[in-house]
Length: 436
Image (cartoon, rainbow, N blue to C red; front, side):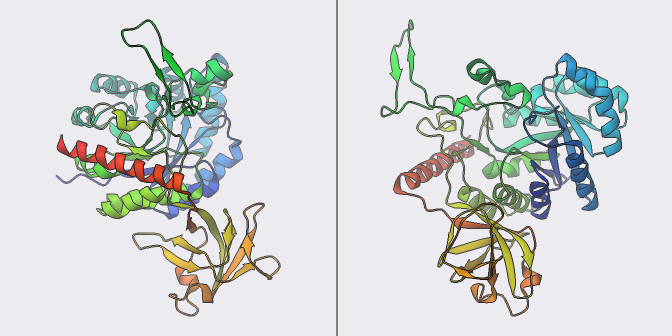
């Protein structure tokens, strides 16, 4: 029996990201419930969550609310009122990691589908059955699960839906349960306040062991704790064939360029167009890609010990906010200069549309300018003579509000070396996986 296509779930750190994710192919999104998710620093309020749920429902899409922090007593005291709010919102489901919160919410909302968060560190079928017995509908497997482990769990899953992270930042701690930020800065990573000290550079001397050495990279320090970003695109077909129910993407604090690119890439891959999807992802800003624990363990290629900078071939140029018959308005999100070329990332499986910026017009004043800088909603008007391949009067049929534009990054030689080295290492990791 041919497996059904997996549900593609994107992060929604804002209403704009939610709309972008759905426009570019996401089947569902997830967002944090105010004060009870691992994004407690976000400024979302109940009204914002309601708007997000209403928007998803209007578009006939799904939305899951995360209540996945490590709960304290005062959090438990809030759950009765939170359950009442969630009952009113009626999302597609909620995401929980704390067993106490799970039992509490299951009792108050018996018909609400509950997904067990990756923070619960489920990596064997016995633990999966434990959560199933409690009434869970699905589980996000631990990022530390290898493909063979996932296959065994899926085989024994029964009616439980299996969700797997396929793309995004990786934490060097077990399923993200890290205390480094707490110790160094007093910011609790298990309550959404991680300062990401794993991305800092360190000088480390190991003493009183068989080997004594100094870890140092060209006098600049060594990024010994910083993982590359997860990217399962080259092996995604294996997970599709296995019948994984949901593919999940990390990144609730990413911008629309990230959301649009990743959603389009994986949606195309799920439909069978893997090469196209990989090319989109390779051009996106990243810390270098890795297959993570796909082979059962991480390797030396899973970390970049020299740099934590996120670089790529393309940068975010802007977002379309208005469309006319022979023009469109682009809200600028990066410096754009006259004579440069931008690309509009299209919906579906079509190639980007190239726009020649041989004319820049301030959308507010109507005056022609030489350069447009991002900030405070500054926008430019792009006229028909900049997109020659589009027929007269057809702009409204080609461009859409919410479309994302990208531009080639002005990377220096050092940045380009980092990009090429990371791509080479990723391909080396992929080839090694294929030989196993």
